[in-house]
Length: 459
Picture 1: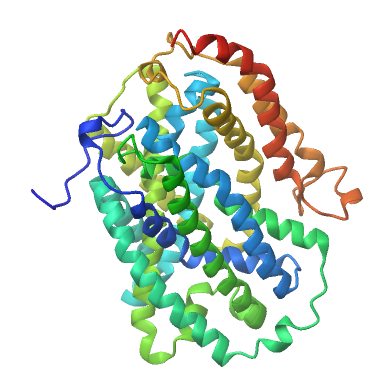
Picture 2: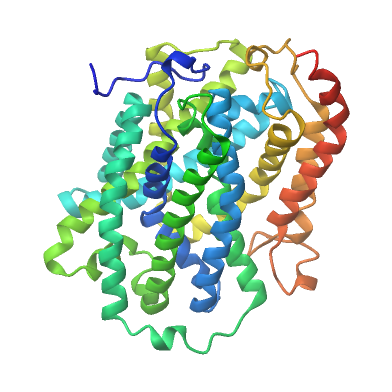
């Protein structure tokens, strides 16, 4: 019906021009809402938890999001040009079978983020309904899956609503935090701890970088003549502004509250609003968290489907199969949330680090291929054919990817898990993600530029 929301028919298949619609402005509200939520605040708290002075934590949040948002928004601009999910496009770099490796890692990313969203959203839902937390987590996961089943149109419309609610909530909570807490002593005597600053920078940059595998999924219905620049800036503005605001709030909240915030994130945030606003704030937190939760399950099902279709050679999915994939991701994410909610904050630190080391090399290779080598020119049919132009495996891409992971190891510093041999000489700083962005991109460009240049005229 005109103006109504219809259940999405498309899955991992290309979006025909006749079904393209919308404006890149919608990406601002979607990604602003996706970042203005409780998990962003928790990530901001991590910048203080690692030992950084709160004032420098605010600087690290601003810089990390500004830097990490660049590749994230560059990935978004790929959606309108190709009209396919982000990870399908990876087959042009790694081969139809070779792309399965980063796909598996991205599936783990989706499950981790979806599970973490269920933990925090479930806490809010439990406080609203007085239901047990574990049951609330399951219900929250089911609601996220339902919205994902309806699909693209509802996700964007829901993003607009959640964005409005999030602005109102965070304006109020920020005002309450600033006016009810004495921030002067917290921000005074700001000494810079360079290793802690770089670690905080990596945490905030990783927040943006891990959107890369699915940001194009939310822009692929835009008309193909949509400006790359417009898609980039509307996405970049929404994601950087939303994340920086929410993370700064979380950093300051943790700085003044400490243990009262850690492990009780939802309760502390609600407490700032006063007793009369407990229910409205819980509803706002639950609604705001739902946006990114839906994006995680939506991207997760397409990534699982992309992985399986490499071997089945199917271009699209039947409605029943599509719902089945969404249900699978929903069930797994709900189970992980229930089992792993005990030490949420510490587990989330390790999770962000893990993702950063494995996804930055993929991001570098993908962006170099799209913008510098193939210059937006792809054979869409070959994306789905192991015997097509992109082949089954691309050894140079896989080698560059593995080297990109390996060269990060000496510079990696994940307390209690991995400490690289060069970390000591860096004063304990973690700069692995910077190496992971630069090295594989350069290696892939050097190995593939001649091969791609010779293939493009024939394409």
